[in-house]
Length: 214
Image 1 (spheres, rainbow, N blue to C red):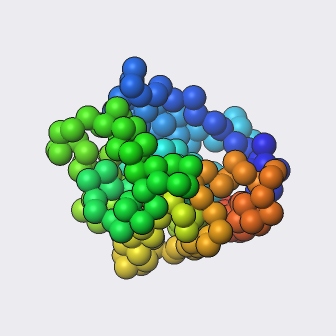
Image 2: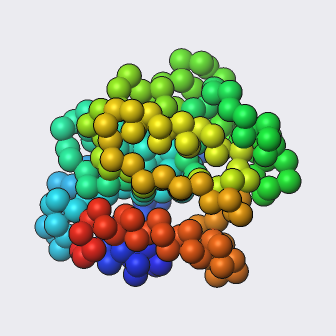
């Protein structure tokens, strides 16, 4: 609701199938199918054809990133992608996974368990771009990105690595690491002034890339 209010956009929330009952590729296929449907029927939503974006946080940020890559590969333009503390590399070795392994809501063990339930232990699956978007062959031509990470988050460094990879490929990127926050801060704005400010900034940046109106 806040995303809809702050951005002034029509928001389609994808009720995608979830692991462990429905592991990869089911969640990815659901998100891609819905995004294609909205793109193909954008007029029915009363929205602009040049104003389609994807957004997600945590696992949703991972799915938004891989859908953005699929749309790039299909020649379908997106106005923006909002990625809040996304998982971008299932088999990467990042300092924040150790530095913030425990004590900050999401633990490194939580991540390992969830990623195993989603993608199993086959390196070919875990390292595919549809699971680990940081392992894509190229990042050129991707939609402008708004990326928000938390200082005390095991996923911090892989999110920042994704931002760096996009920037190196010439993609427009707005990226922030919020020093006082933990994983999941988009849901904490009612109780945390720092989370409220971070959420407001990220949504404002997305709104700018969408022209500030539906």
